[in-house]
Image (cartoon, rainbow, N blue to C red; front, side, top):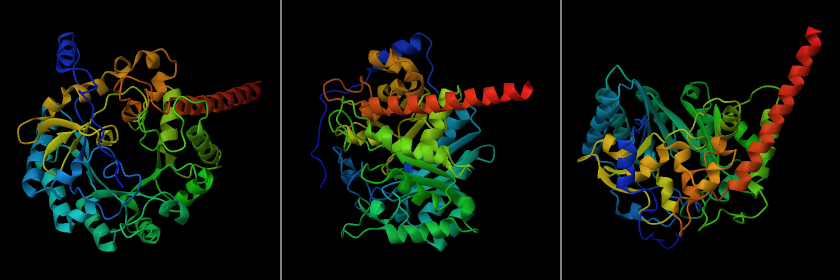
Length: 413
C-alpha cells in the first residue's frame, strides 16, 4: 500500500533569485554528463520499498506508460544540443523505469539508434539499462549487445533476502527468475554487457551472506543502497538522532569481508568511494563527496525532473515545470533545486559545514536530508551511520598505511 501524499507548502530549496545572485557573483553551472530516460513508467514487480510507487509522490499515475517516439527524438536532440554547447565528448544515458524492458524490444533498439545518431560519431555515448531482471532473456541480451547497451540488475541477495521485498503483484517472489537471468548475463557470451548489481540494504539480512550471494554472480560492481528514508519518514530500523548506527554496522561487516579478501573480487561502489575520498581522490558516483550533481531525469511525457528519489520526500518534490519541448538542459541547470546540488559545501547546512567529515560524506544523499519543517537544510538522517562508517574505514586505512611504512623502512634498513 502506498503512503499518503505529503505536501510541502513551498519549494524547500533556494529561490530563483538566489541562483541569479550566485551567477552574478561568478558561479557557472557544471554541464550535465548523465541522462536518465524513463522509457516506461510502470513495473512488473510490486516491491514494497519502491520509491516510485510506494512513496508520497504518486505522479507516476498521470504519466504515459511508455515514452513515445516523438519524445525520444526530442530528448535525443536536447542531449546532443547540450553536449555540443559544452564541448563534451563523452556522456551516459540510462534507460530506466518503472521497468524499461516493458517498453518492448523494438522501442529500446530504436531509442539506442536515435540517441547515437543524434550525438554523432564524435561523442562516446555509454548506454545502459537498469532492470529487475524478470524479463531478461537471451534474445533481449542479444538486442542489448547489438545496440551497445550494458545491463544492471536489481537484486537483494539470496532467495530469502530477495523475496522479502521483490515480489510480483500476486505476492510471488521473483528470485528464481532473476537468478536465471543473472546466470545468463554472467555467462561468457554476455558478460561484457554486465554493468553490475544494485542491492537495497535490509538490516534483517546477514550482510556477509548477502554480499557473498551477490558475489556468486561475479558482478563487475555492486551498489549497496541505503533505503530512501528521511527525518519525516525514517529508514527501517533507524531512530533519527539516536546513537545506534545499524547501517554502518551492516556495511562495516561487508567492508571487512570485501577489503580483507586475498584478491579483489568485485567493486563495491559505496566503499570504493569512501576510500577514494579519504585518500584525496574523486568518487565514481555522486552519492558521496562534494562534487556537483550532473544528471537529469526525463519522464515518459518529456518533462524534466530532478533526481526521482525525491518522490520519497513529498508530492511534487522532483517536479521542475520544465520539459524537452520548450526548455534546454541548460535551463534545467538553473532550476534552484538542481543548482543547489552543484554548490558543494555552500549547499550544505551550517552543521554539516562545521563537521570535518563533510568532504567525504558530502552531507549524505540529498533526499535523506529532508525534514518537513526545514526542507533539505539538514544533515542526512544517516549522519551518524555515515560518520561511523567513514571513521572505521579511515582508521583501517591508516593502520594499513602505517604497517606498510614500517615494513618499507625495515626493508630499506
